[in-house]
Image (cartoon, rainbow, N blue to C red; front, side, top):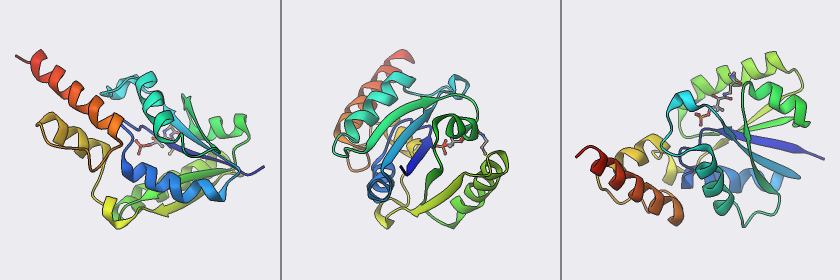
Length: 165
Ligand code: PNS
């Protein structure tokens, strides 16, 4: 069984992430979208919220499931029998850090192979950070994220602005 992981912060999941999932899912028997549990990054959405948003977004893919992990990705893959890491690349700048991560993961776990998927050009400028920035300033993020995520972002942005008086 060919198992892959698509790891990330997913704060929140975007249509760019979903584009990568759509490309990778048919290649593997199982694709696990694994959310890094790292509260020190101070995410907008807590782990359960991110898992729920991803689960809803990947529902159309029968071989895609959602999980969370702590610590090293290499350890998570070793303990779950995952041999492939999926990562999206939007442009050449991404490649620099992605190559370093791929090499480090392979140094930590020799059997781990990273596969890069070029994100479709229409999502090449989309990131979770930019989407949060647009939402924070009252912009329409619905072109860039699934509908449920757009609603959650708008609600969170409204709550944050109220919180800051
Ligand atoms: O969505 P992101 O923030 O670009 O994802 C980065 C992520 C979570 C894939 C990466 O930071 C990671 O794998 N973190 C787990 C810790 C780890 O294994 N570090 C060494 C790998 S280079």
